[in-house]
Structures are given as structure tokens and as C-alpha cells.
Figure 1 (cartoon, rainbow, N blue to C red):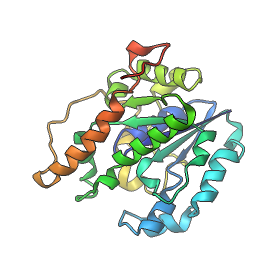
Figure 2: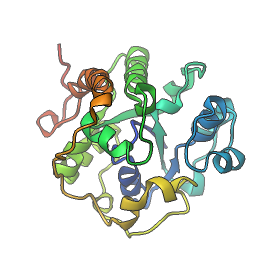
Figure 3: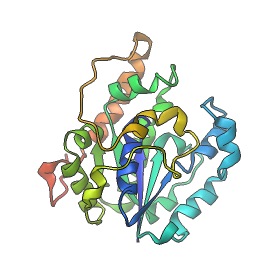
Figure 4: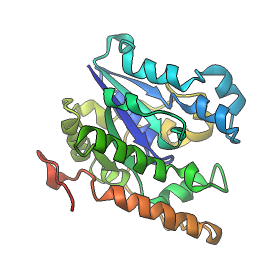
Length: 252
């Protein structure tokens, strides 16, 4: 059995990637299981916050125990767990990460920010999750003594098959062609927040071709962009690429 924790920033094609894994016959998925705890503790204003808090487990310890110890749902052999890095607040202990196969999904901060502000207009650096991604990456790398898999959203969109094959190789799960397409629509596994965040992926049947964005964050978010970019670049140098098939390079 393989429990894959995919750590993401928001607006990084994370839901499309969840669709890809869910379309495998051997895989079940879970969508942002720490979201309710995050909303309850921070009091942050997100769409449907009260409903999410009332509908999902609020105790992070219970969530972590479920993810690492419970039998895999539905008799699956792979449990794909989609996580937002910013949900990992500072008080949450991270020793349970060792029981998971941890991976990281990143995206250019320009593209993250310009997408994010269409839902919430004034994000902070912590809202975007880049410092938390780096903290989680460093924790996993230190605890395991190896570099956890990192994939970039642009690479996924430009070469879905090649990038997903690399990811599957890195987590010791056979690649499946079923990961490249899926039926449109909402899923029972989608969180209650889907109506506010998942409109594009609900219409999708596969990974859309990569198209560079011509948008830039507004002037008041340029400092935020610079901070996010620094964390992104720290992670980007470790990303899996087709040049690395069969090996992991260790940048200096």
C-alpha cells in the first residue's frame, strides 16, 4: 500500500492532478483533509468557511492519524492525498510525515497569484503556501536523507505523460495511461469548496495545454511576488525532469 501526500500551493493544477490519480482503478483520493482545522484556527474568510468547519474533522491529530494509520478506503492500494501546504500551521507537529510518501507540486508565483486573486483579492505570503512548502520539503529531506519528488505545473501541462511517468517512478507506483484523461464533472471526493474553486477542472477531461499567462500581479502585490519567487526557485531546482529518468540529481 502506498500513501502519497502531494503538498501544493493553491492554484497549481492540484485538483486536475487529483483527478488524474483518482481515475486509476487502484487509487482512492482525499481532498484537503486539514482545511477545516485551518479555517477553524485562523478564522480566515474563505468561501463556505462555516459549512466546511461544521462538516469535516477539526482536530489535526485525528486527521493525521486517519491519513497514516487507517485502512485504505475502498480496498485501494494507493491513497492519493491532496494537501495545501498553507494548511500546515506552525503548531501542527510533523512527525507523522514519515509514514507517507511525500511529494511537492509547484507553480510559478506569477501564475499562482494572478489566479488566486480572482477569488481572494488580497493574499498574504502565507496564503500562497510557498514558505510552508519549503519548510515541509526541508523537513522531509532532513528526516529521510533523500530528496522528495518535486514536479512543476508547467512541466505537467507541457508533457503530462512524461512528467507523470517520472512521478510514478519516483513513488514506486506503475504509471497508468488512465491518468491522462478523465470524465468531466464534480466528484463525490471533492470538498464542499468545489463550487468556489473547481469550475475549470469540472469542465476538463484532461490536462489542458500549457499557455503562458500575460497577466502580472498588481503593483501592490509585487513585494509578495518577490518573496514567493525566492521560495519557488529554491524548490524548482529540485524538480523532476525527463532528463532525470531513472535517477535523482542533487543540485549543489
